[in-house]
Length: 143
Image (cartoon, rainbow, N blue to C red; front, top):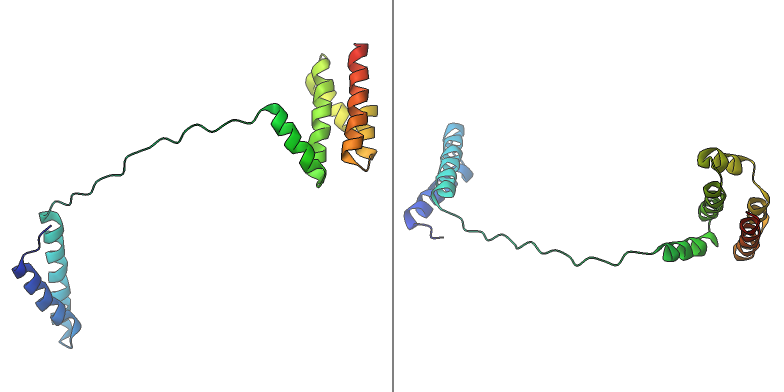
């Protein structure tokens, strides 16, 4: 992009009029003239700007249910929210086995069965989860 010397000289004159002490009207007229020169210079020249090429990111590996469950168990050691999510998973197992999923799930959350009570009452998450899974396994073998 080439800027002509005459355009540069006129711009410097108007800039000097706008900056240095002068009557109010002269300063405003020079600012308006500079704006007009800017518009002419911007629309008079073609600006060739290359767009960056769009690059797709390679697809990331999805976590499996086993990985998500392992992460959930690790987080359950530290917080109550992850423990409640484990309780919901256990209740979901029982609800899946029943005929009415929603009512069974809600009744187990409000009135827990033996497996849920063991999970809630245990101090150690892994020990309680192991006992709970043994109870769930025994209940599954009965059906």
